[in-house]
Length: 370
Image 1 (tube, one colour):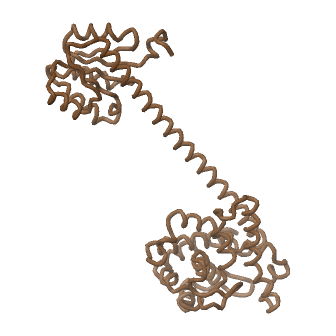
Image 2 (cartoon, rainbow, N blue to C red):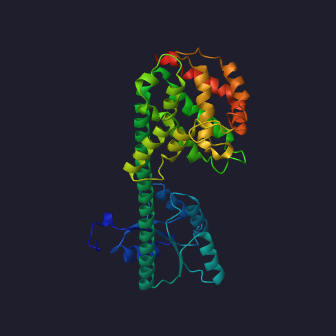
């Protein structure tokens, strides 16, 4: 926009000088192109700067009674509200040491008196253009940061909705377990947080991964959607043949999540951990689990965490074929499974925080949800 625009829309220059003649001269020089504010002392200038409207540039004399220009400039630069306002010194002090002191105080330019009007206007114009460019870049950076935050939130919402939709599907097929999926996801998070500083796990369990584990844990039994009701809902223990069919829920779970990943066009998506958990949470540390008979560190960490969480919750939960065990009894059985059923390090972490497991179990007990 050209200089004919409304003066209140123009860039604002604050002129600070204790000499009335200099104030008049600079006001007359600038008023055709800029909105000007006048202050005859550093103290008065700071009062103006406490207002709602800040200038775009300050022309500042150095030698003034009371607060001098150097001190005022330092105060401007130390205040976050005014730190980005460019300051040009206008002064009769012409020694190199004076200029060095001015730049050290935070000024962007230094003009000696008597002033040359074309030089003053050129310097002011240059600094205001630089300030406008800097403001634009800052606004652009803020916009981009906000846009990244918004899109990241959208992605997280998509993740949450996808996972919870799949988890809800699994829950509707196995309603006897009630709050099982809510408890197990919290158990997994407790274990992961306990182990994240462990040398064996610290490279794998950062905060982002732990949050994704928390989201993914409810999908560990998603494959049960493919198990016939006659087996899944059988009011008693399964026959060996029926158990072989039940064991396929791990493979069915992996395939179900893989289909979802394909639809999302994301083969290495946020569902990776969910796929690992669904497929491998029934593996055992000694290699006697299923579906692949993996042993030791061959088993994904996510599945090792889920194995402890899932078994503990199964032990303390009532089923049609068994009564619920006490917390202490469940802890003893988990301890006995150390190095056989479970990763020894995961069991050690569990033993250290088993009381927190008990609190979660009480908070999300099935009796409260029915």
